[in-house]
Image (cartoon, rainbow, N blue to C red; front, side, top):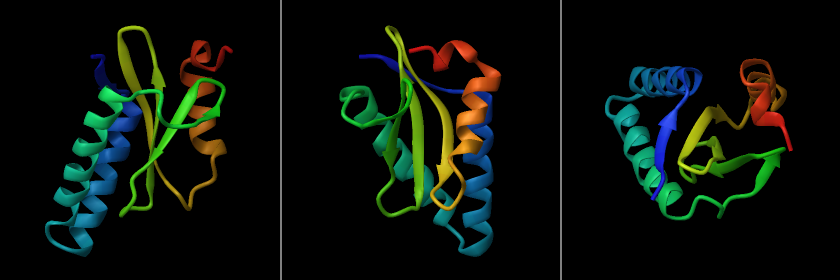
Length: 107
């Protein structure tokens, strides 16, 4: 099974999201982390089960939470490039992929 790695930007997304939920209801940030943990295991088992939404980037929606995990399937790992709220414009995470790592956008 491939390992799952989070880019620094995706890690920052996760911290910000968990902090925001914790500020609004104690324990909710932890619930988001638990949900992500379950989804991470599913990504490891079935990495290609989610749709490609931008070149090679796939998206897994988190059900209860209005967030999506955007990731790349590589030969030795799954790289999470963004944790993105559904209300944000997709150009924001797409720009991150193109600006930070142009090789991700290669077809």
